[in-house]
Image (tube, rainbow, N blue to C red; front, side, top):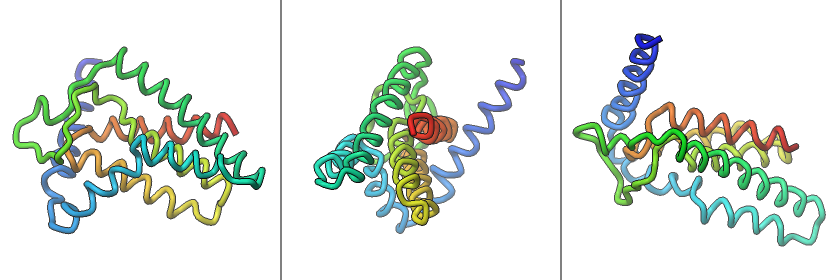
Amino acid sequence: MQRMAEWMVGRDIRAFRWINGACKCSFFEQLMPVVTHLGGTVFSIGMSLVFLLQSDPYWRYEGVHLAISLLFSHLIVAACKKLLPRHRPYQVLENVFTGRKLLTDASFPSGHSTAAFCSATVLSIAFPVLSPGLYALAALTASSRVYLGLHYPSDVAIGAVLGTAVPLWLA
């Protein structure tokens, strides 16, 4: 079991190094710091409020679904961060490219990835035709967290699973 865990951690670090270092280019250096905010608190809550404030009951329902999904998924994220504290990559690895805003809370799981996939799932239920684009944007947001040195790939993968599972469970 120990060997399997070491193998998984090794793969996680190698994937992190590839996304954080080998994928560097000026386009991504401009894009990733912007796209990462699509999973942030302000954007996620703001999107919920936009739907909640609509007069059409359908849109309000989607706003409620999104707000409750974000709440439940982030309660799970907060519990995981307390129970399974993992240092962020830039705190333990050398030569990590980071963005401007460094976080000090636990790395596992990624709250931004959770929020991005939560939003993509709720909106995909409402608008199935937009699903591929919404999930691509969520995946880009999750990737930005690794690119900016804030999370390991496993952090964003678990965030993606949580962000997808909770709204489906609540639907």
